[in-house]
Image (cartoon, rainbow, N blue to C red; front, side):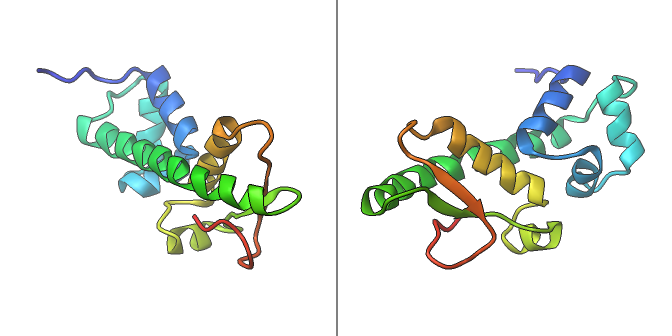
Length: 134
């Protein structure tokens, strides 16, 4: 089965979903900014291996968010108020947590906000004490 080449709109949406800017995507994929810009504009087609890498990152972010949901629900049941969830202050911090950039980690937090029940609130924080670990 032949894989289809993503359109420029699909590339834009995937970068947004993954929380990657053009520069973040270039660094993550080992490409130059202008190459990613050309994929976004439709001037160049994105190679399948780069699309696959973005798809795998997106899948990992989905899996991570799903894994955190049960822990966050449990913590919410044990306390009053929102459950603190760690986020990275910098791209370097995010890379230490095995994310390509801070935006990629925020994309996981965005999924939590979207997927958690309305009665379970989270509080993004930089503090490592008593938080749901990502």
